[in-house]
Length: 524
Image 1 (cartoon, rainbow, N blue to C red):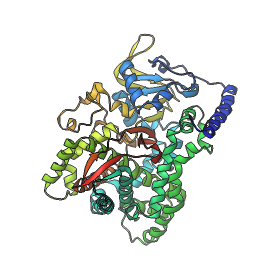
Image 2 (cartoon, one colour; image 1 turned 120 degrees about the horizontal axis):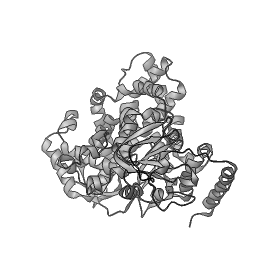
Image 3 (cartoon, rainbow, N blue to C red; image 1 turned 60 degrees about the vertical axis):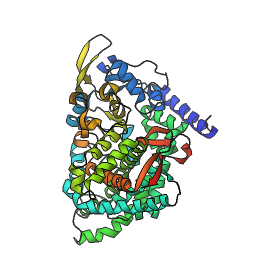
Image 4 (tube, rainbow, N blue to C red; image 1 turned 45 degrees about the vertical axis):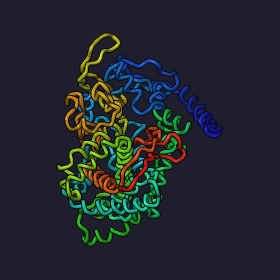
């Protein structure tokens, strides 16, 4: 039973929107998408979206792909236009590599990106503006720059691991740790030090705690009834994005904390040095401040970019590390094999070691991101008529078999990343954490996407993750430092996955704790 206050709020919202809906007419364009296969079981109000939401992320789409193939449509909530679900690797490559600027974020997603991160690189649309922003920041995430930062990354990471060691030492039989509490501190500390020249004091400073607590609070409403209802309403009534509804606006708590506090401190401390040319342009903050000083970036844009990279720079790597530790705890043989590889190296891994001499570590990372992509679904909207090529032909309701799918402007396209990365037809034992598959047992390339490691973990094409090198490197540094100190032991917790902008984990026995992956840490 949901709390009465939430139910009353939901009922009021439904009544208001129902009146708006009744007073308006929905114009639907005729298109071939209407003739695509459609799963059974659509509800009159919720369409198929309630099923997608209520099941484990990706589960519904996997079931529908098994029945209908890689390309089909689903009914949207509140009778909004049908959504094209595209799991075909050739079609996905067409959109993300060749036509990505013709498929901007949907009306549901783009406002969420602005709330969560800010109106920075991940939010901006249009080829010219996106390329301008990307060109401005990309040198900070180059191979050479990450290598130059490698020692600082190690120092920032070990500061947190030292504190974690003290906590584990205080327990006589191993400590039950919420892994996400510590991976969040470590990744935030790294981002602060090497990207923004800021000391988050091992994730324990006041501003670090404000950011981490705000993000934790921001993902909570997705499990509440009001949060579910709001998500369903957003596609049909985008105006809700602008209303003060807690389930929506709470997503922006971390961004607000950053822009109202620590961002101003970062700017104040470093802009004088930039003006006097006393800082080299290696870190991102210096580049942003230099652009601001020459009029290429407004003060508002500066704040938006800072919040974008603080949040995105630590959020998904926090989750990826958490899921890795969770799986290593459940698979002790894999854990010991990884520990053996690190020991056989014979010294603390260098930057070059991480790039080329630790293949099993690479396999563990790839397998984690296959099973737990930070962005489980990608949603885009066509702004121009297009024809999407398909590797696997699809049969229309007329009986016609097509290998190219015409779409009209306004068509919403859902790419179910977590579903296609867990297809049994492609990966065989798709739900099994088995890093060995990356060493000698990969599916045929034509069945896979063309992104990093044949996954969409970092998207693909011109709008792929610009911080991929830093994300991967800090992941490897933090994980190997933990492996050097601790053995991970399965806690037996039942982990529940939900999507709150990114993929989040809850302990089903302690949902009130917020995102949580409990693992027992033992000192080696």
